[in-house]
Length: 148
Length: 125
Image (cartoon, rainbow over all chains, first blue to last red; front, side, top):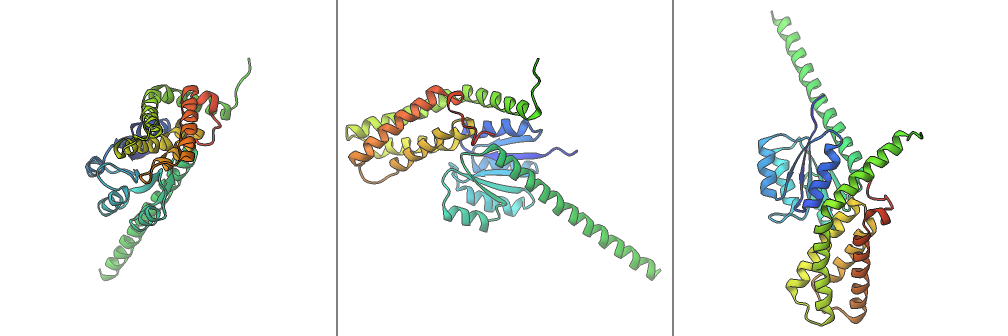
């Protein structure tokens, strides 16, 4: 089975290390970032299945980071986490491509459930794309056979 | 010898993990509490400036975000209320000051006892 990768972006060391502990205990490969800049560098260096993004970061709003990441790593499932849930940041998160929005303090069960659900969605979307490609190749082959 | 169910085993494992995390981060949480206590003291003597207030608000925000994840959900709620009181704005009214003092004392009690005495498991699974 392929390793599931997760990027945790939060400026609070306790949150980063608590979540690292939760996900590593479930077999995930975990990387963490303290700032939006570090998160972008890490996202460019490797592909993550999931990114957990805090909304309040020291160098950029988490929703801005979400927007940027959505443009260069669209397949990564992005889950927003915040201790200050407001209608504005919830709407921004949805508009900028968040796949889920969770409030702190984080319920570890709920978080694990959400992450697993998003991984299933990701897997289904990829399987569908592969299936479509396979169908297209099959159709092209049939067409070629007919022309020969 | 009694054997535990898988669910009890998971519960035990989780509790152990939370206790380890708590031991590791207790000093940092207490440091954040000290920042809030400093602001409470300054507010009591009407010397609370924007900088101290801002730092204390930020410390309360961080505690509100983390305590529930390391076995202290009640601590998170208290820290959230402190954060709301410390948001930039007017000078704290006497009633607010009293509430702030109560909350800070409750938060210290939560942090001193740690998750074993307070854990209601709502945000720690």
